[in-house]
Image (cartoon, rainbow, N blue to C red; front, side, top):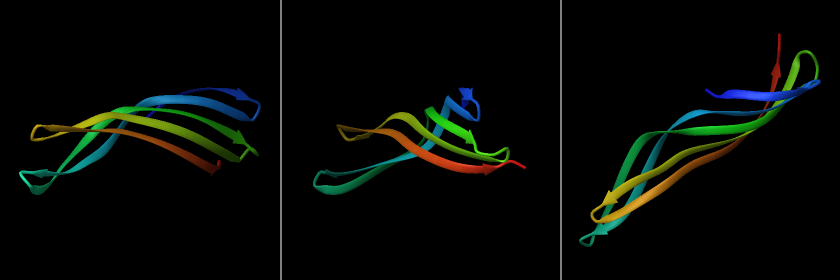
Length: 103
């Protein structure tokens, strides 16, 4: 779910969008505690923010082409093993293209 605002130039829309994002993130860390190999794992649902920019163009009254680049940031996930702490920054950049037919 994102809010979108843009400018239309004849048959082309250029826009920016932003909104909340959710993801399931898993952090696995391997260590030797007391000489024993140990793997600690933590999985968590994380909330963040997504921002995007894109363009849509109407080729004909029925055909619309679109492209979008989106960046999502979910912050840092922390994991403690004994006295050691580990962190993982989770972010995603994705590009999408599409073609739609309007009936």
